[in-house]
Length: 405
Ligand SMILES: Cc1cc2nc3c(=O)[nH]c(=O)nc-3n(C[C@H](O)[C@H](O)[C@H](O)COP(=O)(O)O)c2cc1C
Image 1 (tube, protein in one colour):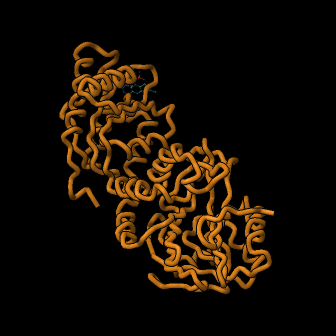
Image 2 (spheres, protein in one colour):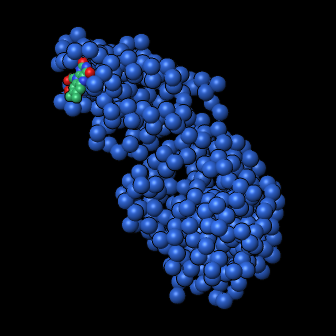
Image 3 (cartoon, protein in one colour):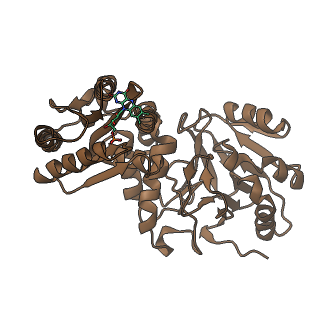
């Protein structure tokens, strides 16, 4: 029944849209849904590139059968073993028992570990080529983008890169699948949110992968999430390059936690100081309201970061602490930092924020602002000054070479 979209000669899109899941990895909201992309190459031999989340197993099988029309499925190529892509392996194997599963040694041991499948496996080496007839598939190992087994498959004939999760974006594919047939505006921020939250820790392996892929001529990038990239390949690769270098654009993100409004007023005042210094990209996030995935996205996007927190039981406000941990885990580099806090009897928040910036090895404004109880004139002025200082430092900031991968 299915009429799958053809994206290149002999290559068909057989992925699915998930508009049901609320949170990716049970953590990251999906207001625009997500697609699980898989591709079918129908040559003398046939090959499926990746599978989809098992919740969509039935429809996935129908799509494959519609395309193959009784032909056998000769190969399943697995670029990535995360269950949103590998989840249908066992099901496909039931329908196509003679199908050979193709992967590297790490992949194949995971196929056994997750699904108990051990027969009809082909272990390929980095750079090896598999011929389907006219299509020649070349395998490029890209470890830790963002799991150890991750690899990419390059169709040398059609110059199509099946990139796994790399270059992926949240957001369903509404009607069309190619960037040439979609309004892609909504995907840029969703790609940044996907990158920063899922892949963000692995800047170094991504730089290595990008270098490895540089010689390849690309007509299409087929990721496992989001649009098939044709028209915007340069922008997509550039975004990955910038993000994996932790290179932020000019702009200041102000993150604060606040229970009763004192720290919030300080945040507003700091923002005014940043604006006075001529910065137009200012994004303020209340940690208790903005989703962490959105805050993390903006921390990756912009060079300046200012954090404010009340002292809470002699610690940071817990929501702020949790967010700092997320930033720390991702090893974000090359930021310009400032901080402020509010307390009633004994301050601890600003000290913790100062320790945080030392750990991150970022450039920091000289001034910090720590107000006891309500905001008064001297600290109001100091908040303005903090904003101005971070803005000036940011404008003059050059990424530390040792912080670039
Ligand atoms: C549960 C709780 C714990 C607090 N712990 C401390 C503390 O350890 N030391 C302190 O000086 N103030 C403490 N405070 C006071 C807040 O830091 C202070 O009221 C601050 O101005 C609150 O900022 P906000 O108005 O932005 O919420 C605590 C307040 C609450 C509600």
